[in-house]
Every structure is written in C-alpha cells, then in structure tokens.
Length: 250
Length: 199
Image (cartoon, each protein chain N blue to C red):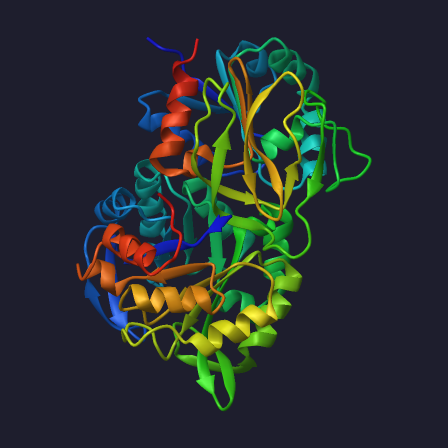
C-alpha cells in the first residue's frame, strides 16, 4: 500500500530558511542544508523547498541551495517558487530537484503545465495552489497571497490536472502558519475534484491535524512552523501518527 | 583508485539525484551521452524519466540499443532506475508499437483504474529470499506503468498498488528498480552501496 508522506517545507530566501504567517512577517529559521539533513535523519518522507525571494539574484542563490541540499538528501526533493518557463524548471532539475512546483505562472499561463508535463513527465509537474475561502467555496490566490484571482480553486485544479499536473500542493491561505489545523473541507472537496495525489499544506500544529487531513483525502501532509520551531521532530510526529492508527514509513 | 560511475543521459531525468547517491557512497560520477561509454564503463547507471516511446527513440537515435542489450546480457554491472527498468522490457502499453530493449521477457502495463495515478510516494517492498541485493523495505516510487511479474531467470521484489507488481529485479550485477533507490532514504542508499560494492 501507498504510505502517507510527512513533508517538512523549507521556505528559502537569501540562502536562509524563513517562515511567516499567511506568507508575511518572515523570520529566520536556519540553514537549509542543516535543516534538510536533520529532517532526513528524523525520517521525513520528502522535502519541499520554496524559493520565496523574488529577484534574479535570489533565484541564483536558490539554485545553489538546491545543489547543496541535493548532495546531502537521499529523499525526493520538490522545488518551487519563481518557475515561469520550462527553462526555469530544467535549471532546478539539473541542480537536483526531482519535482518542480508551479504556482502564479501556471495561473497566468495554464499551458505551461502541459509543456512541463510533456518535457519532464507528469510525475515531475506539481501544481502549487494557494486557496482562500470565498463565499461557499475557495478562490485561487497568487503572488504569495497578495492577489485574489476570482478563480474557483477546485475548477482550476481540475483544469491543471487535465493539462498535465501530476500532483497538487494545496495550501490553505487562511490557515497558513496559524497552527489551527488544515482546512479539512477544502481537502475533502479537492479529493472529490481530482484523482492525482494531494499534499495538504497550511495550519498543521500536530499529529492529530495530520491524521485528520489524511482521513479527509490528503496523500501527504506538509508542515513548516512546527518543525522549524522545534515543537516536534519528524520522528516523534510519525510515532504519534502511528499511535493514532496511521501506517507510516519505517 | 576506483573508477568513476558512468550515468547515461537518456533525456531529462533527475540525474543530479542519482549522482548525489553515488557521491554519498564516496564514488565519483560522470554523466555521458556517448555510446562508447556504454561498453567501456565499469559501472553504468541507466536512469529514466519521461515516456517509454520518447526515451526508446532517443536510445535508438544515439545507437545505444545494441551496446545496452549486450552489456546487460553479459551481466556487467548496470543499475536501471524507474523508466530504466521498463525500457528493458519488450514493449509498453504507454507507447504501443514501440520495441523496448527486450532484455526482460515482459510487457509494461498501466496501473489499474481506481488507484492514485501517478503513484507518487512510498510503498512497501518485499524481496524474494533468494535476492543478493534486494531486501524488504520502504521505497519511493513515481510511476504510472509497471511490470506485472518477475521474468524467468531473474530474482525480484514486489510491491502493491491496486495489485502486486514488480518493485525491482536483479541478476548478478544487473539491478533494475521501478522505485528510485537514490530517493529511498537510508534503505535505498544501502542498496546503491551494495550494488557499487558487488564485483
């Protein structure tokens, strides 16, 4: 059986891990290679690295970080942030990413997903979708939550999968960094909307939140704050998940 | 000094991840698209990401088919990964009408309806007790297609995602994995190292 994945997320800016609340107020959270090595040793199942710098200089730093993390990391590495074209994705893959996540650029130009899937495969083409509650549903937000698009998140996910996305990294903008739990209604609605794997993101404070998200239909659970702040280790968290009846990787 | 491990570039694959696993084992790597290296290399890695037909076309365009078949037939140290395993089969449902390398007497089929596809994640692997390299463990997979059974003359390991299928096969110094050993944590790293140490 396919096992659920526990995925620490490193938001990286200027060669450092940072973390904020609802994408704002970034604080320093350590050295990326050190963090990656520690999470791997603790039993993380995958790592997501998001380049949250927005400058060409920052982009170059991110490639350096990906290279350094890759040499140390015997786990799948998903990298996102600032991917606007197939060439950006190729540079990240060459540096050591296994999967590439696209967000804002895919909303602006959906066919980018098709180009990435044809060139690198669907398993390599990840849609990062930031969703904010709007009325009875969820709206896609882009540019780190600064812009609301008016697009329905579920409709966009279904279109993206049709175009070539092989996995969805689904972040609840409302819950990000708050520790109030994943948006379970969003996860259940997304599970009904697409067949590809879903990574739940935004709001995790502990194992019970993760078990709930997996029960709601997530294939993987991502968290940043709880790991960076030393509230828990991946090993402790997986042991607690196992105690809650979730089968995890040994 | 030990010779470098040669990684064949068959298109855009996560070559850096494969190279990093070899580096962690204390060995050097060289990425090549020269067909001569297929015969000359002491140890060859055949990675693969993408569609079966596209990569077979690339192998044929670089005239790599005959040297690969010969090398694997002779049992020379070769590690095939993910699509690299599927390329060794006779054919694949992914690209009907395209001939694989035919080293394995098998046809590649799609994952059945009703399961998550692509399979992206960790799955349990159970090895045939007669395996020299493969052991039981948890491995990282990224696939939509698979081999249904271990071909005659090979030892193997199985996994299950909507039914049992081949996680890996081995024969002497030839190891072909559907999963990504380079991404399968310390268990995968140990498997890579056993393959590197096998003479």
